[in-house]
Image (tube, rainbow, N blue to C red):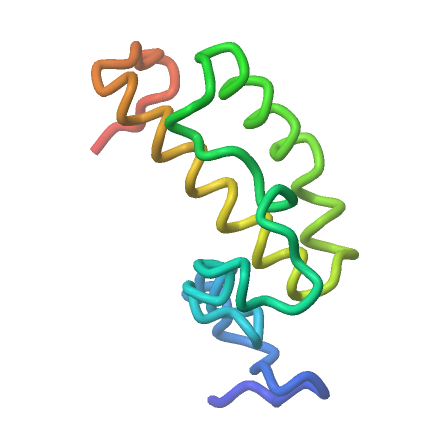
Length: 112
């Protein structure tokens, strides 16, 4: 059985195995790598390099992104969602690099 194709070109079923990046039509993973080449974007708008943030600032930035996640996913332009995804990945990657042995709550584990 095949899913119907919605007006936006995405299949109406089977999308569960696609990442959010794959669902954003203009996402190519590198579109914001060179802010100077992006029209209307100032490098400062893309955020401070996560490696330069203090632990407190890193956590604050992640809180902000997670707080606005659903609204961005549901209502923001594709470019804003792509920027949100990129920034979230940058910040979370930095957090994991700083805390490789982070404490895992046993109640959050699943039985195999």
